[in-house]
Amino acid sequence: MHDDTTLAGLLAGKLGSDRTRRDFFRLLALAGLAPALAGTGFSRARAAGDPLATPRNFMDSFYTLNNDYFNAMNRGAMAAAEKLNITSAREINNGDVNIQKSHVENAPNLNIDGITMVAASEGSEIDLLRLINRLQIPTVNNHTKAAWNTPLDSGDHYVAFNAPPNVTATRARAAQVFEKLGGKGNVVYIEGILGNPVEAERGHGFDLAMQDYPGMTLVARRPGGWSRTTTAPVIADILTAHDNIDAIIVSNDDSAIAVVGALEQRDMKVLVSGCDAIPEMVKLIADGRAFSTFAYGPAWLGAYSTVAVFDFINGWRPSVPERMMTFGGYILDTPEAAKKYQEVVDGPTSPYDFLKMSRVLNPDDWNPQNLLIPMPPEEHWSWRVKKPDNYELPAAYADAVKKGEFERVTELYAKRFSTDPVQAVRDLTSNGGPIVIGPY
Image 1 (tube, one colour):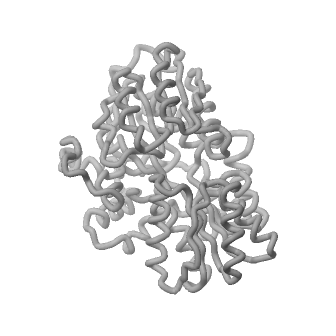
Image 2 (image 1 turned 90 degrees about the vertical axis):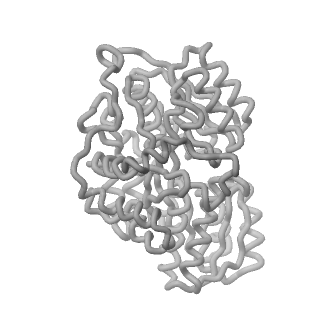
Image 3 (image 1 turned 90 degrees about the horizontal axis):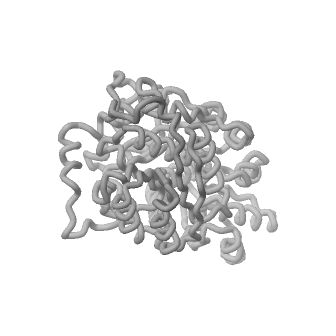
């Protein structure tokens, strides 16, 4: 596992000359050689007896389940909950921040012990998680985070925020497509929802890839809304205006599926790269009809978030760097790897050992089953949003940096990632599936 050279490490030289960033990737590359380290704040004063003996009630809060990505995340959360003696309820808000807030406000009436969620909007996340802290319900939030507001700003019950490396991942998959074209050609970028922080990150990753490959020419850049319905007319207009396109980089898979359909209607051969590894896109790659997608395991994320809340309830306390983490993924780019993904990840049996994820149940040999690294706040936000003049990071961050906590946690999580349930998939990708990760 640890002799893999991560693609993030290979990209580090192109991320600029900033010493903090460079050192961070150097530490990551070395992490697999680090000695075993002590645990990360697990309190022996956990609930008396077997943690699995006490039934718990969790709430999982989603925008929607009419979406392959969130469905997979939901399946992972439910599978982990079953193993952990948790009854898990779904609450759907359709992106309405008031509905999500009402669900949280009602949680005490439902005897909810823990929450996993995707905050409905960046703007609502601060008040929502402060409400959760007042209610003292341990919560893990994923994907959507207000800039320049850390979990420490909200309180101890905001257990952790997790996000994929949107910038690095988009940069890496675009770079792979550009390399396939010999560094020259015409490219289209189909954006997601403008103004959304995830699209800001993915768009930034695409921009960085374009800077790395000056021989590529951008012929069109239009928002597709992360939906095949809204992408279909957009790509139709683009293909009508431009008949000489070599690659289309798409912000997510749902839009990429519409792009593939439009190309096939016109009998055009173009490299299409998406993101999320939803089943229909994976099938297109397995059938040789699409080039690549980025896979970072929504089922894993749902399960890992559930386990983290379970651990918190049973005495584990995350260190400062663990409160904001980036999790890795890989580029799925061959029919063979896609078919193996269908078997291993999308098959009837989950590849993940949910109990082994737990620091409480396995304090000496827990395994997150994916690579995670701390997300330094300055790295994550400074390129996108200027720090407000009236805001300072909690002093605990400076203290953690001074004590080398970010390096320690980076090394610890690399060491604990001792076996990878999707290794067989990664082995069949074109380059052996190095893990793509980064400070974003």
